[in-house]
Length: 383
Image (cartoon, rainbow, N blue to C red; front, top):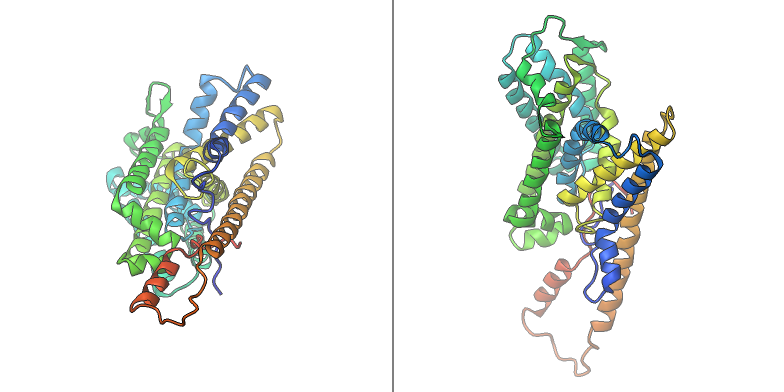
């Protein structure tokens, strides 16, 4: 059984001729919401919310989430989903410290963690592409295996660098800054810019979108679909490893196995929410960044208004994810219905003379139908 669980890549994209105000609202509605949230909480909590200290704390604290949201976004572009990234973050933040405690140089440790992330991504790709296991099921299963490895390595206990064997340069990954902007947040933004450039301005990005939109049509025009899906899954694994490194550096010599999986839901929420803005209907880098910003502002503001309510963060993330998927699903159905109406209107009446179609016409029509077929959604969310 195949679960189609992604947002169609053109689900929300405004049609030509749409009213300007509606187009602006569709594309930049989330930007307006972000500004509104910032103003709202700044008015209610002027002493704590709109402060430089709060900005630094939020930027440093959510850098890991932003990197992980980017890791989730890449497979979504190719029409897949990776649910193992949250568990992978937990494993790599443990290994980044453990290997240093065992005497490995921090630079070698970083390389090994990144290679490990690539291996995890490759395993996911093999399951999804070669074994043809649904991406939702495959990555959820590998995530559980990764979680088991993490608990096996730690024995379920906290690992602490009591002898100070970790490198100071490694800790500096979490403490450096440029002016008021924390270093980890800068790293996350650099990765977002790199992903934006690849997706929007390179053939690789165009082919990834083509594969995610309609795999069969992409193969008909010569795109090596399998290679791009494998590349997307491996990239996701490497980005999850980067998030694990940043998280380990931030922990300051103390790691534990149960840290990591809690990042998965907010990362998914940010990625799905991001697909409804900037480039509506298409998973995109800046939309993902904006999704992280919206969830961060919303949670921080609510926690300052209602201190001590520990349920607010999971509640907000869950509602955000449901809202984002619902918006995309409704827009997808509306667009599909509109396309069917246009197709019915534009289809010419059959000729009455019984003339046979011109040679090659059937093949051309089939190719055209394939190219205009509904866009495949990333596996993992039913519509």
